[in-house]
Length: 266
Image 1 (cartoon, helix red, strand yellow):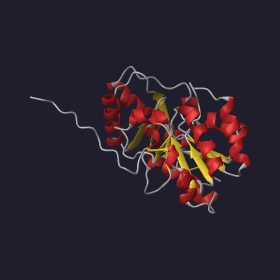
Image 2 (tube, rainbow, N blue to C red):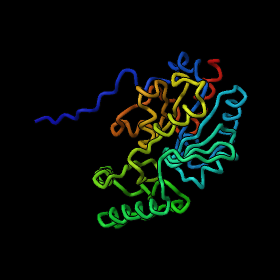
Image 3 (cartoon, rainbow, N blue to C red):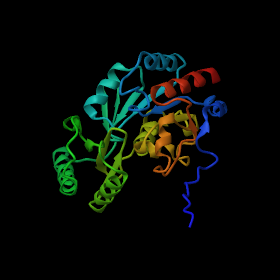
Image 4 (cartoon, rainbow, N blue to C red):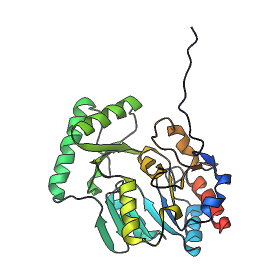
């Protein structure tokens, strides 16, 4: 008997080469981009990245960083980067200038953190090897632990266990996140766009990412223009939505390719 491997079908409107994006890019007024694996190269920021961000600023194209990283880390990104704002903890909080805005309803932060810790302890009973992430102490809305060493089956079980307890769960190339069920990059970004960038339509927004916690940014019903940097291709069989376009190169190099093409399209 011959065993056939059935690969998931890729919609014809997804993962198009960046060379086919010029018409879409010509109308973009705001970029909402993931950070780790999308802006970084080998986990570092590069001079080329800052040059790309400066090009966008000079072209009056707003940039919002939207990442799973902690409130403590992202406050610095908002302050030091040439960006219009930053969303942290996968849609938990928004930083703009000197203001901070919660994007999820958490009446009691102390109790919320205790509830997150209890959920993490439940996961540890089944997966005793997992350890709290080093940046977890700087978080407000979610709880994180390192994704390294966990299989796809492990992650699926964790997702199911969190859902059964009323929590959301997601992961990136770096970390796993226990979070409020309604908390997502898409929900947080939509609120920020409505409240702070109401003159910009969703058709004028380009969302960019590289991993499973970016999947809501790839939903074409909400965001018709999305791009994955090349390294997103390793997750295509795990994503409910695929980006419309994909860059030739991975990580920050791919982001810079997108910026150069965007600037040329104007």
